[in-house]
Image (cartoon, rainbow, N blue to C red):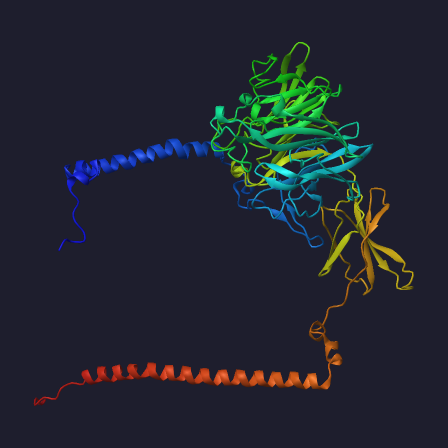
Amino acid sequence: MRPFFTASSSKNRPWYARYASRLPRNNKSILICLFVLTTAIASLHFLLIPVLLRLHMQFGLSLFDYGFHGLYPTRHYNSFELDSPDVEVVVWDDRCSDGYVFIAPHGPPIDGSRPLILDARGNLVWTFPTDKPSTDFKVQEYRGEKFLTFWHGTSLNGHGLGSYTMLDSSYVHRYEVTAVGDFEGDIHDFRITKNGTALIVIYDVKPGNLAEFGGPQNGFIYDGVFQEVDIASNNLLFEWHFSHHVPFGDTYTDTVKGMGKDSTSPWDPYHINSVDKDVQGNYLVSARHIHSLYSIDATTGDILWTLGGKQNEFTDASDGHATDFAWQHDARWYDERTITLYDNAAKDFLGPITASRGMIIDIDVPNRIATLQHTYSHPEGIRAHSQGNMQILPDSGHAFIGWGHCAAYTEFAPDGEVLCDTHLSPSNWFQLGLVYTYRTYKNDWVGKPATMPSAVIVGNSVFVSWNGATEIKAWQLELWDGVNMQHMNFVPAGKTDKVGFETKFDLPGDIPNTYFRLVALDKKDDVLGRSALLSKHHKQSLAEMLGKDIWDQMSYPVIVTIFLIICCAVLAVRWIWKKSSLMFGRLNTNWLRPRVRRTLLKEDIEIPLMTNEHED
């Protein structure tokens, strides 16, 4: 009978096995060592070193930036149910602007994304829960009134489908702006103009021939679209499509690489991410994947000029540094001939090792000359390969940069000196993008919430906060005088300065068992709002904590039933104790018996044998 397993012939063996079998044992070991060494060197050169260089890990940092406090440290409050980031202020200078920071962090360590207002030191000022992701949170002016605006909707791999919310200074929803037609607004931009209109970005999936770029002939792309919409009427005023004016060949993205085969995974040759208007009413548009800024005629839709990219029309008066931006975001007109721009300088983690920067570019349009006026880079050389923005603060002229993919924001003096630098997550892990902020802004804001202050008693202290109130300077304790409960009169009994978002107020030891409340005061000691009534009770006895009056509310049969249940519980405990005692007693007895037997045997062995010998 033929055996189940047969030795394979030498002809069927791999070449390396046949060759290795002819070598002496020592040579085989050498080959194995060389193979392992080559693999180690290749792994080090092509994998480990490139990854470590791109992680840009540093030494001499704080425990926060090493990650010992967590990937997204948070603060929790007694008088408020939501948390806030516990930021690390790495650099602080009193010259920093007093404005508030507007931010909407995202990432796996964050339990839901929501807009946040922080003060200059990173203390929470306002937030509220959202059922959908939100981003691009900032202050904008509409018809002479300041509003908080943000996008919210469904995120789709760097894009989004949603609408734009506008809240007034009382945090009341006033407007909801949507794209016109068969579109939904994208996350990338929502800009209110001086004419009371809104500029919004749209990603439209449409068919395209991608054969030239390694894709299907009948493929799909993301077309970059922007609209100008009247906010009051939601009427469409202007619409422009990248695919009607810019060829696919201007893109810097790689070949299609499997994208564009169907409508669920379109190829993105343009990636529009910001729209602005100049004083003539023409549009300034940024296309990240083309490395270009475009000026669009507001009447005809024609491209007036292109800055950067393959079709650049400007002479660079700064040795190429004014037009060499790449994968950029947030192009804005600062004045009639100055543009601010956030240059990511990177597309993804494995791209070239570069540093992101904020840019101020002078544009001489008639002569087509671009001059770099100033750049702003992070002191740690941050390389943010997505998201981000740059802003010139109006009062001080300082540059304020949100680093996007890297969860940090920095304020610079006009000459580039770092004044303030704040981290929301550990900087040693920025490149992993575990926490990120699409944009971060700094603005003045006066919040007058329509809600009441919230106060909670904890022990002999009361914790008080007022979500969104920006004008509070102090909290005052007021006690009821105990005279008329129908028309209660309160008298001041103490005052403490507001500290951060939530202030702890220690109650006086001799405070009577009466009603009291906390009053928010502004810098002139005028009343801004009052908390609900509170009362400090005397320490409860055990009977009170267990609910003494509950016995008065029980009927006689219920009391008897409870007594019987207690008796049964006592009998059960007694039975368990008795059984346990018997069981442990038997175990002890069985354990002692072999011990006694072994002792007796040992003693028997040690008994001396009798002999016939006698002593004289």
